[in-house]
Image (cartoon, rainbow, N blue to C red):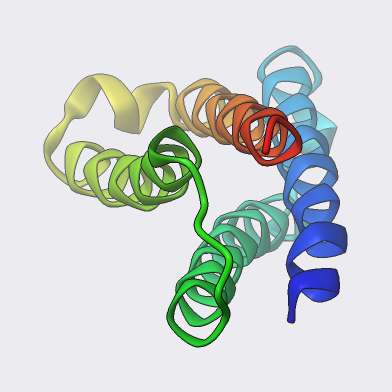
Length: 123
């Protein structure tokens, strides 16, 4: 499980980077606003959740203790996804700038994943 968690962390980083840059680029390049963009954004956020669940399983079943900040970044990323989704549902501003908003959210999640990786490597 530790090997999966370590390798899958980079999937989280790269998929969120792809989704974030694609969404932000589509702000200026309208032909990039295709349904596949939104499936990529959903997948990028789903892999964050999968990674956090894997970390929780690892924490519960292994004798390894992650740093408080490593756990903070994982839980914070899931909370950020929920907050972003709730905010997007009620905000006219976001509805008019959906690609920019979700592009920035994905890049934020990428940054959270990079910090979590850094904290894990500090053990």
